[in-house]
Amino acid sequence: YWQDWWGLFNENNPSGGVTSNVIYRNFNITLITLGLAVAVKRMAFGLMFGKQSYYNYNQQLVELMQKMLIVGQVANLAKQIKLGWIVRNRNSSLVGSNIDLKTMYEQNSMLSGEQDGEVDQTKQEQEDLTDSQRFQIIKLLGEWDEPKVVVNDESERARLDDLIHFSQTIASINNKYPFTTSFGNAQTREACIESASQVFRNLQIHTNATASVSFDTIALAALDRRGNFSEAQIKQFIRIFRPDREGNLTLLDFVKSCDSVYKEMRLLQASIRNASRIDNAAEKMYNIVFYFLYLMIVQVGLFGFESGYQLILGVFALVTPLSFALSGACGKYVEGVMLVLNRKPYQIGDRISLQDVPSDAKTSGSPTWFVEDVDLFTTTVRFAGTNEVATVANSALVACRIINANRSPNAIIRIILRFGVSVTKEKIDEFYINLQQYVKEKPREFLHLIELSPIAIEIQQGYVEYVLLVQHVESWQEMGAVWKSKVELTMHCHELSKELGMTYTAPVLPVQLHEASEKKTWFG
Image 1: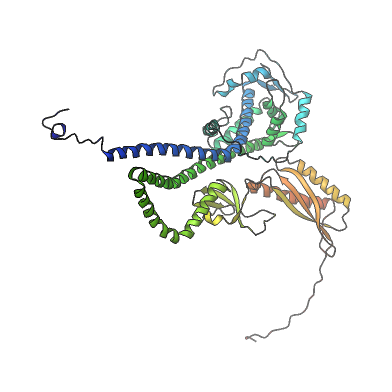
Image 2 (image 1 turned 90 degrees about the horizontal axis):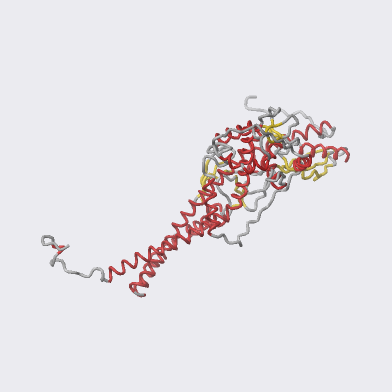
């Protein structure tokens, strides 16, 4: 590289020794150690935030995937019916047309593609539901389990492969066909409704029914390779699709069931994405402390303890007066951040109610807000009654009692009834039996009737006050459905009480009439 005409590459430029200079060495050491420290920091924060997301959403994701798999199984069954692999005879039982159930399950992977193959229908082998299987289904249709409370045990540490599987599962449902290609496009809610309607129409092929599908048809998706029913899986099918007491599903009921799974999937996706955004904001806060500590360590390591000591004194001299001036604001800021990062009382899409801690909760339900957005500093909510949007500082919510309807169990409907003191116990028992029958006839609305018990007696007014408690299928998150069921149940109680002659009529109160005295006015 020797150049006579360019002084940089001849004797005019001394060797200098830049590479052996102390400043150059310290600069390289600083960059190398900073890169290593940042890599370790990002890995540590990634594992920490990943574990938090895993502990917070793993159970919800598992339950959601189970529901999505069931919807996918039903869609595969509908596609098999459409292809002619399964036809329905006059006795309303499903039969295999060209292969038995075992072979059909072995070749189930063939139905995952988007192209429909031609089916050879030269051989037909019928396989009806046996009487024992049918009795098992009918028996299970009459059972409605109590809501299951799942305790997430965080003592089991999440391994790295658990976090990888969790991330891959989240990515797998973010596509055009989350319920398998047999179900169809479910990228939007409108597309999901259309695909669910098409699946229902496929289930109706070769059936005489035009308005409903028998649960016997859907239950075939729960058959294992040996042609036997799994009781646990049948119960999951019942929880999702909720057939009526006769074991039938209408188009509206089927689409509602699929739509509820779709909405649960989208809300979970939105919550996980928002949690990731909050984690990124939290990492930026931690970066301030990280880079300060790194700068202090580098200062001490390269320039000695005295230089590092002077840096610490300078920082404290700057921070101390600010801490006194902003102590109140910083305290509230930290409280709000800890509310979102540690307590996590709500997530996007939840219906919440904000009340003072000493106040009493309303038995008829509380005024609620929908959570629209959450960050480290504020929470954006929308009032359920008027769609008004408000932004609340997280620090203001620390002292509030936050009722989360989405995390609450199935809603309990409370109705106050009054019967005359002359109503006999036999009438009350008959009224109770009729209410039980009414509740059992609406499995998509009610779980069971809890109690009908007296709570007050007014001899002078001539009535006994009863409280009716019924547990709804939905939580207060679906307040519209709960209130609709409550109104219909109240009207049914009123009509039933009139039919049984139990209507309470309040006694006529005495009325005192007297002539008002004339008052003089300015006009005479």
